[in-house]
Image (cartoon, rainbow, N blue to C red):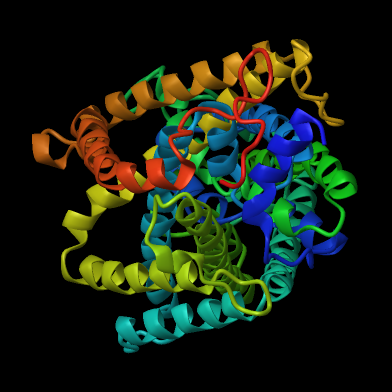
Length: 501
């Protein structure tokens, strides 16, 4: 066996026990549905109100970065498929400490996001049942997605498939209705729809006066990034795909089309149908449009889709954190019980661990929502960090390929290394944008939530992760027999006789 084969088989050890049960339709719909969530259905309302039609530019720009991200991820996945995803790639190219930080940052992102989604489901249900206790909704919603995840990877795939069908179906209906209204220049309430609304909107296409700032569409890009969060789920699911060599390129290459149609197409029609001042935070802009049109039942359907989108996010959170925790557990960087798997190939212990955090977090959110708001913003750092690791790992992979150390991936990222550098610079600017918008959000310092997360939260997270690493480091050293560095050097495999990771 060659050195490369020895090292690869060592890295693949964490795949033992998983079932390759996700088929073509699951993968395609996971890829499609991962890009459609509450960020589009609900979060776009406040951004439209604060930015105007120029939000279209914001979504398109971030969409291009998201495409670069998926191409970088595609190259990594077809280099080596693993359910450990970003954690495993960081271990392979940068060593154990990098894998530890990546894994726990990704877990933090999903843990906090899942808590917020549970709370959101409880709020959405009050649309039909205003007197229903929120804790009841939280427990029922969590029980549903927990059962689905504990059954099998295929059960997860089936749920995501049908959730994506519903989300895509709702968007397609809106796009058809919206095109008819805009092209036909029909009245929506007391306003006439039409593409001329792009520049006749209050303040014009790119508002700069009054409550608007010229840099508004630029700053809002930091929020748009999180609307695309979860698009990287294909990387985690790749470890359980039946045919990743065929499915991953198809899923990745269709990203730019999905972004153009679903996101940019929806935003274009929304700004063409009503003045952006009509959209308000807390109400889906799609609900606003259909309500103005007098089609209340469609507004109710969109409300149902919001619940499905939140459940889909919860489902993805449990699925991915269970697998990432197991990858960490195999290197003694997470509690040993996270290694436990069911006969159907489900890392159930890590999934249960995350669900317990969901319950306590949802209770915290109900008791003291202001305190939790800062924790929720911290989840955004997890998204930025994860995207950054994908670009960094792709750069290192391509560097090793160019030096002849690793065979070329059959699905290479175009424009490398420049496209990954552009992605990394953009993510750095997102952090700057978050700090600026956070500072402007309130005259009171302790209400400048996002600013506090960036300026205080990042150093605090770094301190916590450093302390955690000091605690687990002795076990990691013993487990790896001191092999803490990356698995590759510029000359070849670092540990040709590797036994396991």
